[in-house]
Image 1 (cartoon, rainbow, N blue to C red):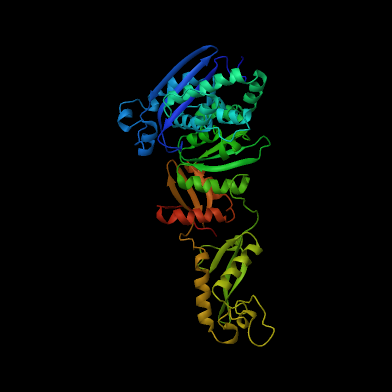
Image 2 (cartoon, helix red, strand yellow; image 1 turned 180 degrees about the vertical axis):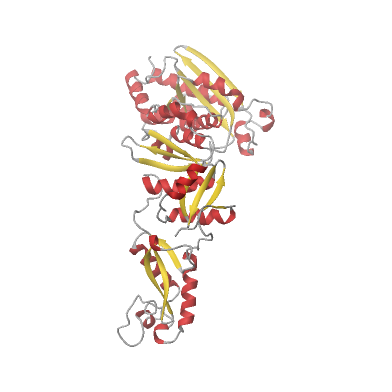
Length: 462
C-alpha cells in the first residue's frame, strides 16, 4: 500500500531508543535501534551509545545494558551524522513517539543540529484503530495481535516489534481506514520549524531573551535563556507539552543578546511589561503606588503616593510597589490585621464612639486609640510590620553601570535604562528620560546588584 501520509518517497523508519531515564533534558541515549522500510525492502541498524553518565541500576536490570557495555561505544556526537541520514525524509514511527523523538531532538540540539520529521505514534494509532481495548503498551500489542517478541527492552528488538505491528495492520485493517487514521495522527513540521531552519545560525549561542510572535504580531512569549540558540531550537522543535502548543502558533522569532544573566533578567522584565505576552505572568498596566510614612502628632501614618513622584536617593520610609489602590490597601489591611495595629492611629478609621476603634472593641488592637499603647510603641510595631515591604534607598549619587560581557547595563534609582556596547551608546542612554519604576525590574536589581561591581556614570539627576 502507499505511504500513510505525504512523507518522502524514502519510506518509513521504525525507531526505538534505550536511555538512562525518562527526561530528555537530563538523561541520555544508551542504544538506538532503527528499521528502515522502503516498500518490500527492509534494512536494520543498531548501536550502543556511550551516554557519558552512569546508567541507573534499575535501568541496567530492565534493558541488560550496563556501564561496562557502553564504555567503549561511540557517543552521540560521533553517531549524529549517520543517524540523521537514516532518519532524514522518512516518516518517523515509534511507540510513544513523543519519548523517542524528544530524546533524539534534544541530542541533536546539544550539537547545534536541526532535527525535524513527520512523526506517527503507534500508541495513538492503536487507540484510534482499537478503541475497545484499554491497554496499548507494546506488551499488550504483542499478546493481542500474536506478535513475535525477541529481545524486549533492547532498541532493535523493540523497533522490530513496532515494524511487525505495522505489517500486521497492513493486512488486518482496511487500507482506507489505516490511511485515514495515520494521516489524522501524523504530526507534521510547521511554520515554527521552517523559521528555525531559516534563522538558526543567526541566533546567539549565549545569554539572551527570545520573543515569539503569532501571525497577528502579538507576543506569545518573552523568556530568558542561558543558551539562547539551543533553547529556541528545543522550544520550536517540541512535539508535545506546553512548548509544542506554543510552537504551533509561532510565526516570527526575535531575540536580544544580553551578555549574561543580569542583562537577560532585566531585558525580560522590560519587554514583558511592554509586550504583555500570553505565556507567563500577566502584568497589569498603570502607574505604581507606594505607601509613604509621615509623622503627624508623633504618630506614623501611611499615605499612598505615585512611585513616579518619589526620590529613591532620599532616605524615606517608602513601603511596597502596588499596581493600583485596591492592591495597596489589601496588602496594608493584611498587615494591620496580622500585627494587631490600630486602624484609628493609622488614620484608616475614624473613631465615632467612645471606647476606641472597632478593632479595639473586638480585641484585635492593642489600644493606641485609647491610650493603652504609646505612639512610640505603635510606631515601632508598624515599622517592623512594614519592614519586608520597605523600598531600598538608592545607594549611589547617580546612575551606575554593571559590566557583563561586551555590554554595560545602565541603572539609576533601581530603574534599568538599557545596555550599551560603546561610548556613544552609553552617552545616548544617559540623555534619555528616566523610565518609570518597574516592580519586576526593582526585584531583579535588589537580588543581583548588591553583590556586583558597579561603575559610577555621569552626574546625579537634578
